[in-house]
Length: 93
Image (tube, rainbow, N blue to C red; front, side, top):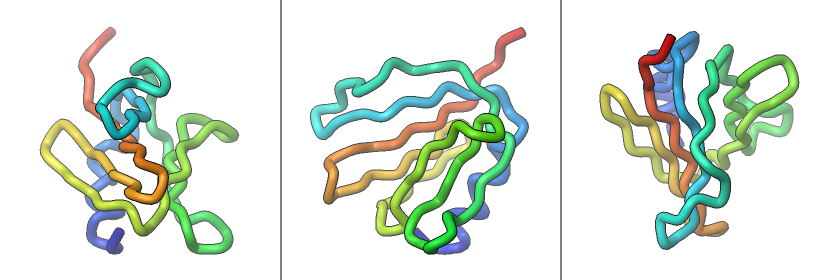
């Protein structure tokens, strides 16, 4: 994952989103959950991108993940674990 791909996540910060982790078959490891991203930053050892939903809860996405970006969806595929981390913009009240 390159710095430009990390910066592309900035358009999702402070947005209403749905997040999930999918396995290699595209099945949910966890159901999509409504969240708000408050920040994204590198972990202390520089191996993962942390996507924070509050002060304590976050996704830790390996920097080696392959990122795909559109206006409404940010996803990162970790080939080692066979997992895809998905963040989708969502409009709800």
